[in-house]
Image (cartoon, rainbow, N blue to C red):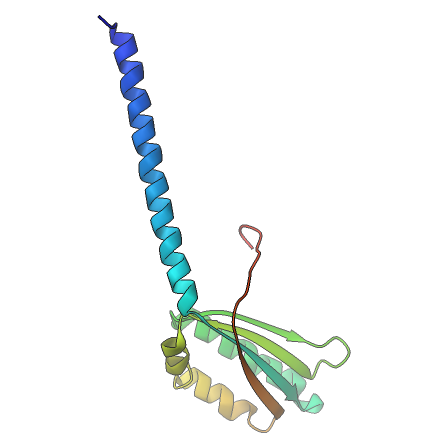
Length: 142
């Protein structure tokens, strides 16, 4: 007959395995859900040429619009706006939306309409390019 200590060790071992299996299943479930959500995401590049004399005003309007959209719209996931080092009036924005519906909802919001009206005479050219994500790498907590 097994001693009580041996029985407890066996039970703990089984419990640890059950916890490990459950954790793995939950983790796989979440990562499958995350992959499914990523498949629906919409990625867009906006290439903008701004009137250099209006650049400071444009950048302020852009930053306000981006911050508001990310704060109040669940479907607006990410914005990265960068300026060409040689010509800061050439701006490229990476936009990531939960899906196409989120983008369509975004462009009719009051804050986006305000941005468009504000920058209407500042933007010399605009090119929107829909792109597909082929890979991503990111350090944790960045």
